[in-house]
Length: 434
Image 1 (cartoon, rainbow, N blue to C red):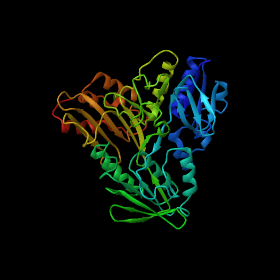
Image 2: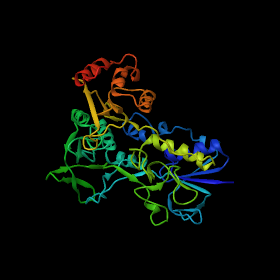
Image 3: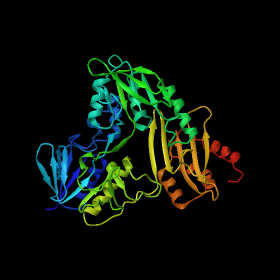
């Protein structure tokens, strides 16, 4: 019987396993060193904050896997012999396969900072990282101050987690404004304000130089490039993630930042595929990044590769870019492309509206000449994905989008609606009638 080996039990690997089972009677083995069962990685923060227990983050009951004949193995893969089609485990045993799917995810970035290996210093990606945080920062008595290094989505999640236990937090962001490589300036400035309103000591334009140890090898302070020494009991390193592929070096598989794949998620080695955070498109799809560490694209890749593995070759087509996140109390959605000032082209023009009193705003990107809608960001306003996806596919104008913004609204019935104010502001900025 054909044996499919999947390394990694995150959203990509598990989606692949589920769909392979739907499409075939193949033998399926999923290997993971992180956990016995699949869990929702995006829910880890809510365990620490007391909103959920670990078992609540598992979408499937533990008996699901046996019932669906998906074998789970808790082990770490040390290396792969692609010629012999065998994965070698740290335990010394090996696993033969007929087809292999690499779904090994990401790991936190480390940049060689002095002291990055001290006790009390850790990234936040895995279940083990969460357990370590619980040990090191259970409350404000044991952790009198935490410092977070890196101003992305994981960094602000960690800040929210620590503040939920009233632990003082200093947040080091190397950029001049939070996430300003992604967000337009008006949005980035609003998030700066929001972070500080939550009593987080946000230090912009600041880099980590060194983490200092105490006599027991535990972090006691860190030094910034602004000449400041900050005493702390925990340092969260959240300066992004990178593909978890170190065990594949010198194995013969094509590597860039991640495992190089074509549109069918095939590698340069027959019967070997890569999906999710560890996969890198040889030729980027539109304006998407070659490596996308995003939950929904991982799910899409898992379903796509399942069809190819089962003999129905399918191209990976993620469609229009979209994403969502939460900045403390503010929900964020993005559809299409709304680039920051440093990344947008001369043809991309923005309309930005912000509520005068609340942390609610909207930015629409459109083409300067033909006024085609390019993308839309919202903070504090929920929109319907199907409507935005249709608009982007139909290349409608920004004028039509603003006129019909109410049709895209997905806020609950009794929420305040802001479309009239947005349309009025748009009319004032534009001479074109809508």
